[in-house]
Amino acid sequence: MKKQTPRGDRIAAKVQTIVAEILRDKFSDDPVLSSVSLVGADAHGGLAFVRLYFYTSADPDAVQARLDAVTKSVRYELAARLNQKYTPEIKFTYDDTMDRANRIEELLKNL
Image (cartoon, rainbow, N blue to C red; front, side, top):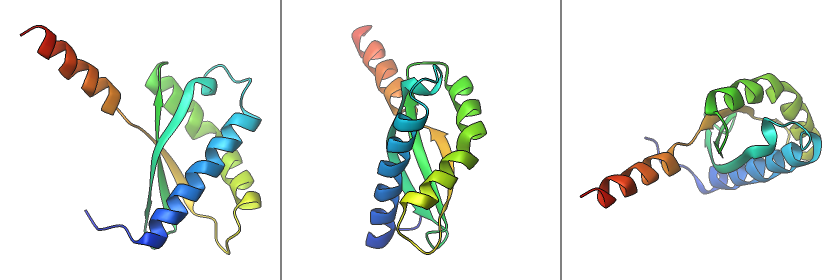
């Protein structure tokens, strides 16, 4: 994996914050998206692409489908709020770290 630049870290963090605000402000009444938490972001491709990692207590496949459906709208709103010449493409990816941690905890309890 390529090492992320400090500028890439800043852009990814800024995009993550703004997208979280957009999801909170515009989609708070959506029952599928109301359970989404953005837990990380990585900038790739010369800062033209940002992958946003999310966690949810709901069905991850249903949430992924809904996020894919609203990505265009979210990116349009991101362009209005982001003070940059170019708006990066965004992609939502489920982060299963909590699920794996819970599984390991259960395995350790059963020892």
